[in-house]
Length: 299
Image (cartoon, rainbow, N blue to C red; front, side, top):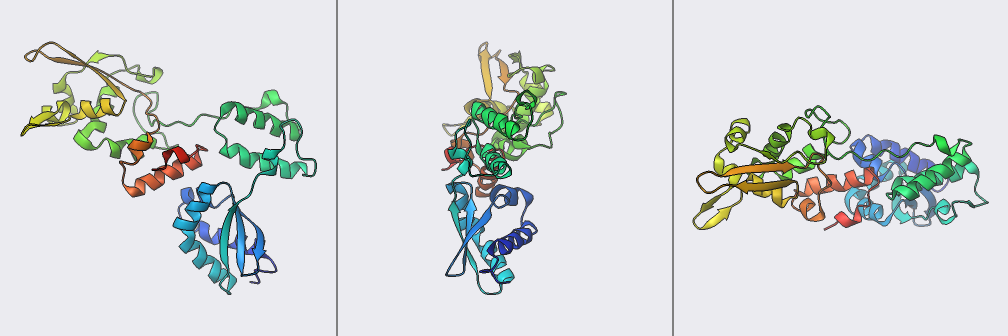
């Protein structure tokens, strides 16, 4: 293929080939919205991407497979260079769009911006502007659905197929002391958990958790060995900010009252860094897929 004559067609063909070589999540997050905007004299396609983070990801993580595919399809060693191209629609005001852009192009540009916007008010303004351009009453524009991070249905069991965020990221983080299993057990004890942000503060018999998980008492409450305290599952959950624990009674008659969060939130940057490298990469992809600024989650 003569890349100099039709660089856009070469990049389109490259994208089609790359889509078959990687997971859908990876392709959608980093490549689907890219486009060829020019061709340099040194046989290099200039590819526009949405932000600096995408440039870094494509150049440092995906470039080997991109370069290999591009070279094979071009037949002449064509390479690629990635740049951030400003969205012209983003520079226009909401009330006065860029006059030199056709309506269809402006809609495409605004859609691209919308996917990267997190702030609800800004998102709503762009949605209304899109509706005006398409002749749709702004009252008919639905609010953008929030991202569901927890994986529990209203019945208190089963997993959402939307993201499996808790199962993918929280579970590995809380593997210590079987803390994730202890969390799900305590959450299941409150039949009305799905309708509240936290389960009710309730007496949780340690013996019952031991039977359900199963595990030892030390696994749940922690233990001192050789003068060193080893935290238990309740310590881990409390440290993660997803459990509140009250201790009642004395050493001989101690009871534990526990409340846990019902909808697990995004991991904090510090928590993400505790995950294996592969899961950290998946977490970054998750943030981009759901239009969440990934930069605060960078180490």
